[in-house]
Image (cartoon, rainbow, N blue to C red):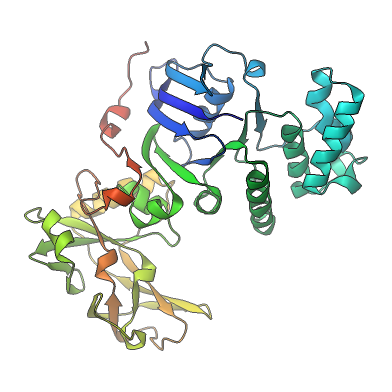
Length: 407
């Protein structure tokens, strides 16, 4: 096993546009690293550069203590699991798993020992004589993983391996991959556009946008301390609420009225003018079911729609936003593959709440969990940097939107 160190990696195609722009990520030996972001963010390109299927324009790709930029894929000792499984339909499960060993001309006894060990680990023993066409999607994915296991590779690379599975099977396979990686302790880089996979699988998560690393942190750090609007909007479901806000002293004026925020947050944004407040749906509540309201503030508002789900409910409250905020949210929607960030507040309510559609309701908000963003740059002005991992942010975003001469 070995760590993977990406140092200032750049990938430019013929038109000079950087698909990956100065990305540095250190994957520790045995770590499960997630590369996540919307379509076109550069995550799969980065994975293909690790394995050697894409040339690196500039920067250093290190596996262990060796620079591998000029090594062919077969010389990097990496095992890759593809989205489409890449199984040979005419070979049995046994021979599909054994294929890399046969290619390396391993002795038959070694082949059998490794195939059967991988098969036992992945619970494929009863399917070894079947062809891939007679397997379910989850079983085919396990066969592809078995082929990776027998190689004794320095690292596993996964390229959106669960995207072809239905929702129930994806959940099952997530837990299987997590257990397998922990058991083997092998360095793993996993590409996905699904933030649920990113949050549940990764030791750390690298969030990418337009080829630029935005933030590198643990899932909890990303969720609780997003470095900018993009990370805040991408991580979390339902997405974070974004509202126009102005701050005077420790009072934040929102479309529904003024609320008090902690003094340390307020100090960071004094004199900033119009801001964007970010608050997750679960940091609101029906004030009537909150026992201790001291950690936040309350406001009264008209509830437009309520969706009751049994153990919880979602209340939807429309609001007006000035053009500066609407423009930023529209740009963010485009970056998030069109996920709607409409000007409505989404409030998560306890299932015991009796708030109904059309009510004038008193809502409590935990203002200690509020983030305040610069509407021009998207920077989180109130982030706890000691707990936010590595924030790279949007400093290069403007440059990234312009073609760069190939070099």
